[in-house]
Image 1 (cartoon, rainbow, N blue to C red):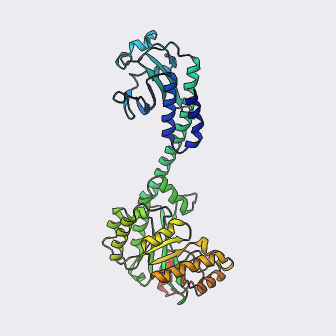
Image 2: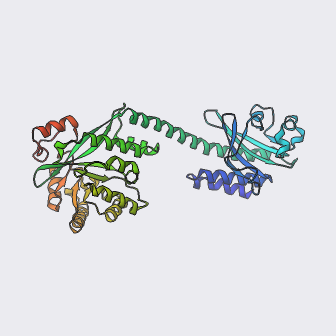
Image 3: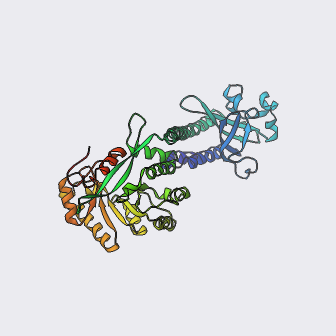
Length: 419
């Protein structure tokens, strides 16, 4: 019984390891009952699939992933009430004796509790069995199994809810991809000294209503396992819009390390002139293989592209990216830029990045500039380029083309702020 209590007490510490929790629960119940086999099954159509199994020494007979027809096992009879949940001796149950599986396994005693989801739908069974009859099995034993079956039900309900959420997000993101339900806007990146726009960062906006911010869509794509597909679609669209009349400016494309290492990106870019393209590495998570990432970036550099590290100062990972990838541009995160005129700590950190950039031959670009005071402070620190609502809001493609046609590339810093 102490093992049972230990298993229960450890559950809150293992929220992120459901499979381990279920495995320990099966082991605890099987040991407590003195039975040879414990398993958790899932109903898939007319089949019972074993999702978790504890059967030491009997792995040749039953293991995770094995399945049996529901016509051949006790499950439907238990769900319908034709068989009891606890069977100390299967020889005393006519239905058990009529079923070939009883003699084939063999099954002498059997305890099984249905796993039911919150919506009332049967999921599967939490089951223990032995080749030997066991007349000592009683209602208290059934209560113990039911306790662990309830635990399993809770774990499984969470897993099913997450699977349903992922499926829903996959459907939504695939619709966005298939119907191209997104558009691009372009935020100017301004040279402070010359008062001219040096480049534009391509930013994605999503059309489906109700409106949701881009970061929510990107997070949904990650959850759905479609983040790379979405990034590739955005990059493809941006490159298709970037025409020859913009070669005096550069186009900055946001790309995660995962997408950079995907062969589909190299295929997408391999036949293009990338001399006016900046690849902005946006992901804050740690990179597993900097050697591979550097190889991919070097291939893009050979095609003319430059590399920027986005959101510098936002976390340790961005610092590692800077050290490991030798970027051409370092973009200061807006959290560092905002209020930099009144915050000595922000100024000190920005100064450190400026010094590092000078030592390594990189350029600094400040993001999120919203006031004249922030702009002048950054200039005093040695930052020569930046972007933000104070300098210019993101422009729709048509507005950007009109701006370029009338040769207003100095619009941002000269005070013609765009809504």
